[in-house]
Length: 132
Image 1 (cartoon, rainbow, N blue to C red):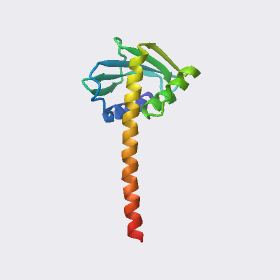
Image 2: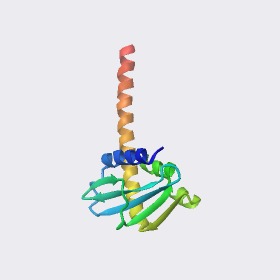
Image 3: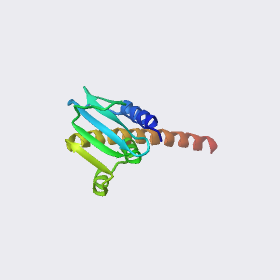
Image 4: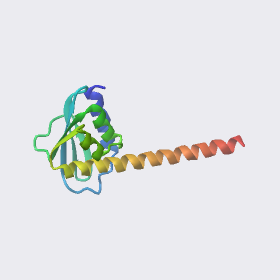
């Protein structure tokens, strides 16, 4: 996966993320190592999450990981404890703020998946009732 594809996926997830309950400003720089190498940032400000393909020098925290780990964050499947214990992720700065962003993404991803499953279930139910 290329750097541009990774950033595009992160931007899509950020656009769909509900950060309305967060009133603080958080800036997290993500450095991708290996395939798709590059840096981008996630910023939460005024209850909105934004991803841009630039470094953020005055960040609260910097996370360094490979593309697969970064994508697992944006898929809502990130296991913080496992990643830190295995050394797949390094964190510099205020790791608590990084956790706030990860948990916010996870919650939004989970809500989206639940809503999608609910729609699919209704569709299957309607199709089943038409068959009978």
